[in-house]
Length: 380
Image (cartoon, rainbow, N blue to C red):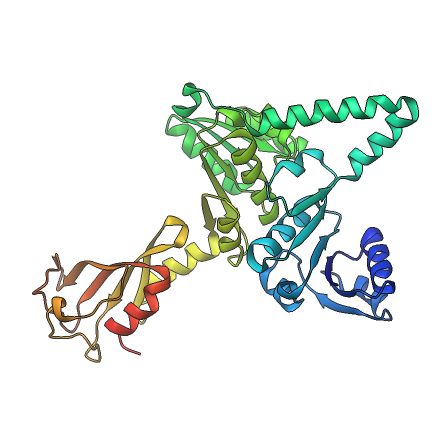
């Protein structure tokens, strides 16, 4: 079998050696080159240095051809995100993620993504030493509790709520909380650092819950079950993903928004169920595009999680569509001209409208058709 292992720590190293010794082909991923040196002498093991949650790193490791992916780092949310990327982007037949926090097993419902929780196994062993029958009873109670959590209905009051829960007390979280509070929203904030949380509670004059917002007990304690919107703005993409998944799947939060530090992860989080992603890098890029007159094509707005865009095209004399009525131009499917700005006047385009040099054409276009529309309006 071809097996991808992410993380060459205490568990990852033992599993790698055992599988390689059994004749399996192992692709090993780890961020730290120093750790990978410990596997250099192993046969049947290929090494890839990089972040296991990165789509490009997984592609380099050949996840698309793998039979299994094992995410065994020391970070729960890295393991969960890496396993989900393997399933969603490369359709690996089965992924296994090691998690220490029991509630993290509730983040996703893919039956081919198996979570292994050493914490629960340790509890079982300890309890079994005292009373073997207690383990079965405890497991039954836990299964019933998990079933109730996953199916928890939302009340009519929560559907009309103006309550927004923010996870992450950094600069973005603080300023967002203040802005929403001034707009008469009910706001609460989750911050993991105890001293910072106490400071924020005084500075913001709103509830601040101390704890890890990527765990179900903390989300429940913060009232996520009645939130209209949950916003995850920690500095960790994988944490923000798990926070949004737990809030939506287990607590029924209607709208989840996640900050994305790495722009490449925007598509990842969207495909894994986050309603809206916000990338500071992408926002800055769009502002620069709007301000630089040398750029002929500018993205004004992204809709449907980036699936549709409102784009502005500047037409020069080389444009293939100049002087032709729009009704005679074969526009690609899922494209629509919204407006033509000509000498500070806005024209609503009709079938007889003819485009001229200097026109600014604003079009609504599905992302996968943008290249065709660009070539049609601007040229190759």
